[in-house]
Length: 257
Image (tube, rainbow, N blue to C red):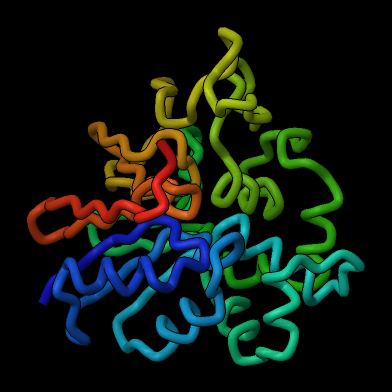
């Protein structure tokens, strides 16, 4: 039995199937998905249907998953194609609504965007305890009423926590607030820094697995591993086996050159 961590799927069910073949997946293996299961790709329903049928699959919500939920349950007037396909899939919607934003498993933390460097272990424990109360119709409506980078860094505020776990890339080096990404998602001023590069931290000693940042593809340092290879954009689908640290990389056959 093996344990795998899989980056952003984005509705690419064929890609997921090819990856599962590559790792010789069997039903006794454990899979952790790092969010953005749906949206952009051609078969979001297929992805969720398959994951929901497995006994050892775990997933966190990503920003795309959250936005589709918000669009549906708050009756958005401009539902995109993915949201439209889910309107009558009540079992899939209910399943998404019960997903966490953060999973702790042994020495690892799994999330979509990252862990704020000023969160202590006690902060993380509190988030794990309370996170099931964060995702609701009212909270999603309020969450999307204001851009994340305009929120004050209030570390016990549910909306700031949601923003960190699903949308964070850059932080302000001075006050540790969220910064808006640049067009190439690279820092473009001295006070704007990738969250995992901030050294003045209260960081947990647990290793953090995250996705969300396709232009990074994969990074690994002493406390973080990114597994978003941008497969849906023509890049790679990334998968990490916890048992031995082996990295699997599936190239999209429509990879851009």
